[in-house]
Length: 403
Image 1: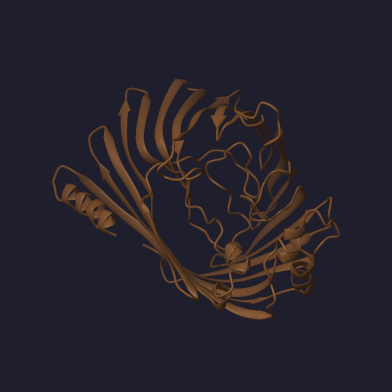
Image 2: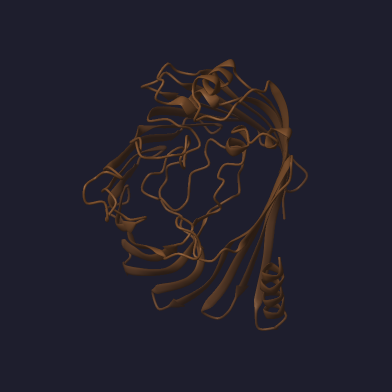
């Protein structure tokens, strides 16, 4: 923990200087849920020795997490940081059950990591994470920008699935909000003109082969081109995690709605000459978003996530193990302080169907209470997607505040 205190000391010392303008913000959230296991999960672990036993019926799971954001503004530059803490507790930890993996998604808070700026502590029935998932220096020069450190990479408008951005997993289906993944490296932003912006990212990752090993490099370009007042085109190209990747996003805005399309193609590993360690991957997503009335908002996303046949993890980097899917998201404001939300997602290939409801009541100045439920309506019949049968039924409550 000494490194965290050292970083905090540097931050506080800098903010003490009068010419620096400092800002602090953050959030804190407490969740409690009751989870029920399905018979399919118990039977699957008995039939498949690669899946640990899931022999449990009902368990409680509690979670507390929060962010502390800091910003120091100078004349033409700034320093930003974010410190993330998450503590969860449940008897599900005692036997290495899979359910906490889903409850804590995203589990990896730094997507491309060179510096191991985190501390994980695990007890018999609990887990605690301290992560510095953002710390960077930004310098603006003319119409351009330079950033160095641990940065957030935010682009792409997919909420359920966002394939063109492999550096920040979407959290549209999770119970955790106000969280983003950091990435170690450099970012150059060039504003070619009023309609065209290009970001160049040079990132590194040691987490794949251990922090004593070599750095897996990422060289990536993301561009945004405003073709017209209604049409925006994005493109991405580069090398990331030993694959060459290329893709793009099409977005067209109407008066009260928009349609969008994303696609990403990935080659085999660059060092896999014979193709015995990897295969080509491609993803595509089509979406629609509309403000139906002043109180009712609808979003639909559907697409294909090419299944990685060489992946060893049941869930890989996805919240749900879904290959072909369609999702419908509704949010309705019955009062300025009360919002009702419902999401249903279906795997077209397997029949797996999942329903999520999140209903929020705002109170005080910056606090809200949320009631949520995660209900697998159908587990599907495709034996190839075994992980779909491990998804639990959950009902819970969350209390969050912002400062």
